Image (cartoon, rainbow, N blue to C red; front, side, top):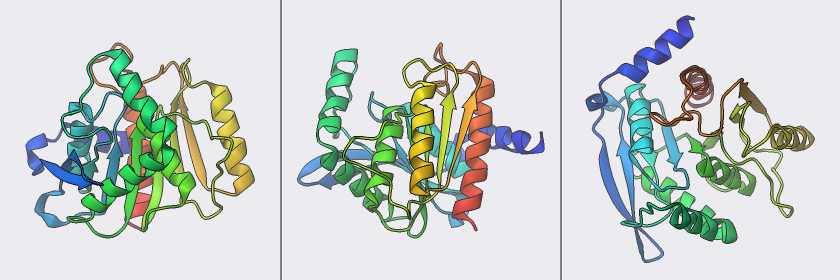
Amino acid sequence: MTRIFLILTAMLLPLAASAGQSVSYTVNGGSYEGYRATAPGGGSKGLVLVIHDWDCLTGYEVKRAEMLAAMGYDAFALDLYGKGNRPKETGAKKAEMGKLYKDRAKMRRLILAGLAEARKASAGKAVVIGYCFGGAATLELARSGQGTDIVGYATFHGGLKTPADQSYPKDTPPLLIAHGGADTSITMDHVAALSKRLEGAGVPYEIQVYSGAPHAFTVFGSSRYRKVADTQSWSAFSDFLAENLTK
C-alpha cells in the first residue's frame, strides 16, 4: 500500500513543477517536434524516452512526460510522424502507423533520432517506454539491439508480435510488459508467445496482467480507462525505473 500511495502522490504533483517545452529537431531533412520535461533542480535520476500511440504525439504523452519529471526523471516524448502531422481521423491514423510498420528501418531511425535529441540535454542511462503502437515500436528497438546506454524497455498495452525475420538478442536489457487481461486487440495468446520467445532467448522480463483491463487502459478520460490497472502499472513501472536507472 505504501508504494501505491507514493506513486499516487507523484501523479498528483503540480505539472508546473517541471519546465516542459516543445523541441523541434530534424531527421534526414524532415522536421519533427517532440516534448522535453526535465527533473526540477537539475538532479535527474536518468532519462525516459516516451514513444507515442498511433494517433501521434498528443497531450497524453506530454502529461506522462511531466509525471516522470515530477518523479525526478528527465523525459522526452519523441515524434514519429513529423512536425504538424497530427492525424485526427481513424483512417489517417492507421495510414501513418501503417507506413512505419511497412518501413521498420525508418521506425528505428526515428526512434534513435529522438533518443539522440533527448540526449542533448540528458546524457547517460535511458529507459524506453511506449503506449499501444508506441509499445510495439519500443519492442522493435529492443529487438534491434541499437541505442547505447539503454538499460530497460517498458510497454503499456502495446503490440507484442515479433516479425518472422526478427528475434531478441541475448543481451537485451530487461523488459516490463503491462497488459490488460480483457484486451481483445492484443490477446493473451500474444502475451504467451512473447513470454515463450523471451524465455528461449534468455532475456530478463516481467509481464504484468491486470484483470478486467481492456486495450488502452491507461488513457485518461477515455471509456477504456481503468484507474486500478493504471495505478498498479505505473507503480510497477516506477519500481522498474528505480531498479534499472538508479542502481
